[in-house]
Amino acid sequence: MPPVHTGAPSPSSRWAVPPIPCASTPSFPQSDAPELRAPELRAPELRAPGRPGYRRMSLALFAAGLATFALLYSTQALLPAISDGFGVTAGQASWTVSTATGALALFVLPLSALSERFGRTRMMTWSMAVAVGVGLLVPFAPNLEWLVVLRAVQGAAIAGIPASAMAYLAEEVKPKALVGAIGLFVAGNSIGGMSGRLVTGWAAQVWGWRAGLGAVALMSLVCAVAFLVLLPRARFFRPASLNPRAVGRTVVGHLRDPLLLRLYGIGALFMTVFGAVYTVIGYRLVDEPFSLGQGVIGSIFLIYLVGTVSSAAAGKLVARTGRRGALYLAVTTTALGLLLSLAESLAAVLIGLVLITAGFFAGHAVASAAVSRTAKTGRAQASALYQSAYYLGSSAGGTLGALAYHGAGWAATVGIALLAVLGVVSITLYGSHAARAERRMPASAMAAR
Image 1 (cartoon, rainbow, N blue to C red):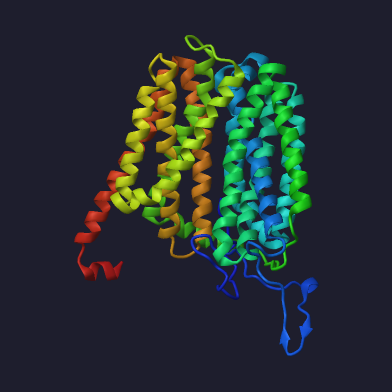
Image 2: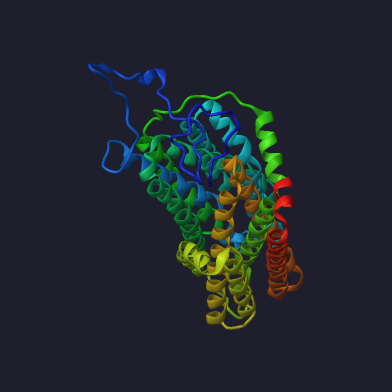
């Protein structure tokens, strides 16, 4: 996830690499004062492949991404077992996922602002420590209420890692190497989210759901230790004073932009679909006629790998069909997958999940990239608002989908997801209409705007 800028002015922009702007300009801290070697002044260089510290830095952030996203979704594959363990409904158990993602959405902006003042590495270290520490307590939650509270604290702590990692990389890495470094961090996110579900699922099948949560917490602890050992200290960070008014003005400006609002809505609705489907799918597969075990259900999340392919292909899709054409194709694929998942055949359900996943990741990639291109200033804040909408959509989808399933079964969950798909279509159609109207607008009126 992209970093969030506090809005404080930067003395230089030469290190900024759109669309992931540098949150603070690289500068030489006092402890790293350059040595005077006649006849020139020598200073630390930005990191790049083959240079000291680059591999350690990349591996450290990969470990951080793996640990935090394994923790974030650790209960999702275990919801049926948690329901049985506490004697609660699917809707009640879904709060163990929704509160974590909701807290992450709410804390991304403030924690990224604090990282401007107190440092990227310090924020990531404390966030990791709290998230893993709470993760070690989660298996001992005596009831659902305590489990939900602990998960909310965990989600809030996790928000400090993506909020700071991108800014750290932008400050420490050469522009030409930045995409590769960020790609490895994002790979850690996706692999962590997938592996967390796999680990919890198989451990729960053998030893129970509490052991599953304990296993993912221990895995994350190993990753956290690797992060602390490997991460090089920041050499170019300089603390900036917090400027809440500047942040507020930038955020309000983005929220008044009609196109950005549409993109935030699209991101939230796509994630509503995804959150509903993957929060509830475990209940569907553990019931008749499938009756699958927890380990097999956890393995279903390997389908996430399809999303890696579809999100990577989104750029080519936009080049051929345009942004709105790509969105129409994404929602059509998602809707077909939802309808196919209604079948009583396991093969049909799995193919449906493949289509839903492919459509979701393609749509998410198109919308998130469009946010960075649309925002002319404050791109970091614009992207952070998108991430907030995205995870709030995840929370809403998980809760609404589970409540619908508890009330009327899988068909009701699919109905909720199809309503969200219809919302994406409506927003995209409105955007097409607005674009045509703008093209017909006289040049003088455009200038006045």
